[in-house]
Length: 113
Image 1 (cartoon, rainbow, N blue to C red):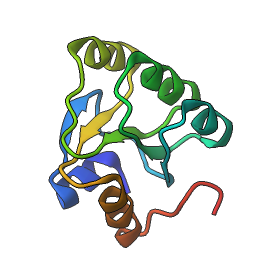
Image 2 (cartoon, one colour):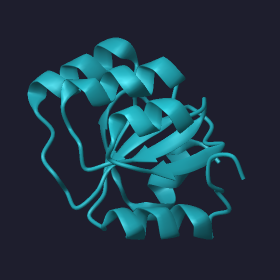
Image 3 (cartoon, helix red, strand yellow):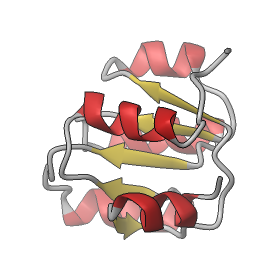
Image 4 (cartoon, helix red, strand yellow):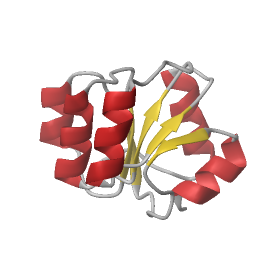
């Protein structure tokens, strides 16, 4: 599934970057060091964190996208950094759990599974 297909199926909003990447797995975590240790290329990462370090971690692992749940606001600075680094960010109205459940219902498995 591509990020664009995920957007079409969920109604989530593209906040930054482009939606062309393939999603190979999903991960839900807010502890950046933990995500750095367990992330992998192609992951759709769900986090409530919206600061610049999120962009650094997502870029490091070439995540397919970062999903920000509960319509949490993302600063213009973070959006600009995401666009500059080519990191796709999505906004979702649902909770982190809801985002994970939605992705699981589309056959997106967890990292390492």
